[in-house]
Image (cartoon, rainbow over all chains, first blue to last red; front, top):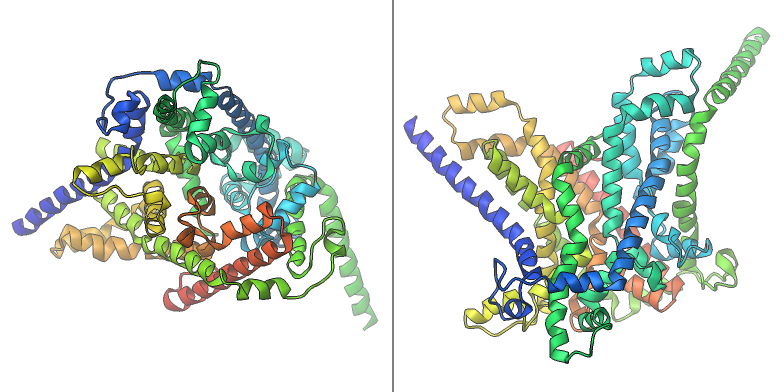
Length: 298
Length: 315
């Protein structure tokens, strides 16, 4: 018996080290970005800075905050995320609730109408033609409306309603003469705050992080969301984005520009990703819950 | 006879009456459905109707239904083009490579599950979930910064070890590794959630019994925990297969450049380029249709196999 417990102890230790290693590997890039954003770019570019900040400077952040394009992008992203999430809930919740109710006639038909979109879709080009045909190109609606709900979230919310809203409650209120509108707003919604939070969070994160719809539907820079601005700065052409940032200042030497480009780069990553990374640990249980409700097989 | 028939028609009448009554009483439920159904109709079913442009020569001024039919011309052209095999090969290899790493989150979940509940477990979960919330643009931006041949962290390390710098992001040989492993960095922690939930449901009596029989921890993990979550694993595998051809195209698009296109050109980026950048709508729609056809076939096939082999399937 002792032999076994000895090997179990070894197991426990090895397992602990394994998890620790994975965790460190995963968070190292994040720590590096944070440190790099407040380090002297020279130290970063020459490899002197590899874990903790070296020669701390907030120059990068100052440049980011002075950059008008980033601000506009930030504001756009916040607007798109808020409006998109509201529309998402407004369409999703009533539909999921109705589909969870027994009295609905032809429920199977409606469910399949929704589910079929999971199996087959028209694809990029036909969807693009529809959005274009509706005159949504180069407006906020092209970002907010396509993809506003999906079959998956309807199924998740529906199974939540089925599990938490007892039939007796619905029937009793109906006998008391309550209409479905009244019932939904006054009774069902207050009982469903967890699922509302989960759905809102998932959709908000997706909207905050998406760039592709903006890439194909928007050409007016004033409408660009943050991710598209980030793409310009981080991936497409870092130097020119930085020169835009410092356009107000005096002419810089090219080397100087390249140097600060990398500084702005890290600061801009922090500015864009930090809101989510700060908020997420507090909302972690909601996110986990969302994944789990979604995985329940009907 | 007549009486029966009368009864039947009466039944029928009363049924239609009941339906009418139910519709009248619950009309608000149908109003609830309306916005969602309208959305799906406009943004999913109309594009499905629009798929017919794959068999037509689409002209904007003629509209979808007015454009002339050309049959399989676009498909023919695509299948016979020199880039067809390259696109297909790249798409399959990239996705198969990603699928190869499918066991990693399972191993990590089994491992996390063996940790004693406490601060370390909680922290390692919170920290490993975090990259899931970072946008693809930022991830690719980080790759660009880290892998830079001159200033990048990775190349500093490589030079420090006495080797030459590698220009990772412009190299066709490196593209797949970078794409897949950076994806794994983002999703490893997050993917454990479902497995951990399944592991929480493992019957503790099994473990007690195995302990009495003298099974070691490792044996119990492999013989009890792993088989217990097998249904979850199979379902997730089927779902992954269903998305086989369409994983992470937005990231590929960001990582792609003319120097690595030999391996980074996949069907979806090609649809984007020909369709939206060059405006060859019909041709691009045909390629997109080809791709979703493969997807459906794959999903159904894997589901059938899973149903035969293990009784776990989506339907």
